[in-house]
Image 1 (cartoon, one colour):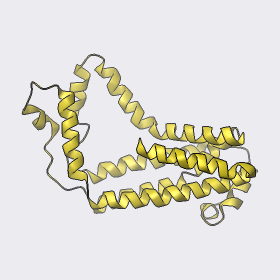
Image 2 (cartoon, rainbow, N blue to C red):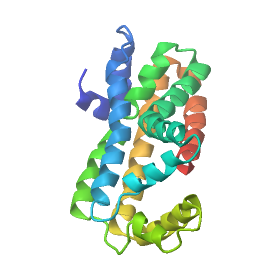
Image 3 (tube, rainbow, N blue to C red):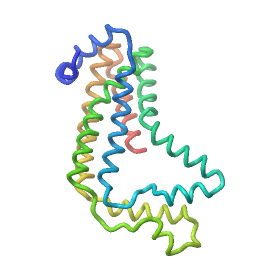
Image 4 (spheres, one colour):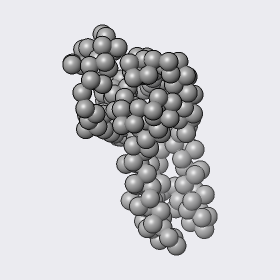
Amino acid sequence: MSLWSLIANPQQFFRQLFEQPPKLGVPLGIVLSAGWLRYLAYWIWTRNLPAIVSPDILQSLSATPGGTYWTGLIFMGLMSWPLLSWGVYGWIIQLTTGGQWRAWQLAGWTQWPLTAAGLLMVGAAGLWPANGRVIPFSEFVAFRPETPWLNQYLTWLNLYSQTLSGQVFLQLLFWFVLVNSLWSLWLLYWGVKSLAPQKAVLTTSLLTLWTLIWRLL
């Protein structure tokens, strides 16, 4: 099996894959790479702007009751967000096909196009960095120190998002995600076709709906 086989002949790739014992190491790496490359692309893209989660924000959050807990929870959420997507994706495949561990193996491999999209996003972020005037949150909050910091943070995020809207990277991001999501669903169809042929259309339809919902979260 080779990556070229996955691209050129996915049905043959998955047939050969399912003839071997299930291994989740490579699918896990694909899933984590797909998620973390997007984080990296965003960080590169906004490198000329203040960080959205700055030390001042973390310090303000930690100073509130239970703030340390929520700070850790947010961090763990960002790190595990790709795993959550993989878990639900695989669970739906397992539910419709009864493929057991094969379901999560298939779910991981079908996210390879999103890893490719992440690599393209990293390159695009380096070529077209975000431009605009956004003052750091520490300066923004100093104008009205009596206002709760969370309210000010939400206002600042709104101004931040307005600065980012309409930039070249976001337009490219839309097409990168759209094309590679369709490619991912195409791989899913052929993967399920090899695993449980009679469930290919149903599973692909359900995962298409899940993909749309996930993109809106």
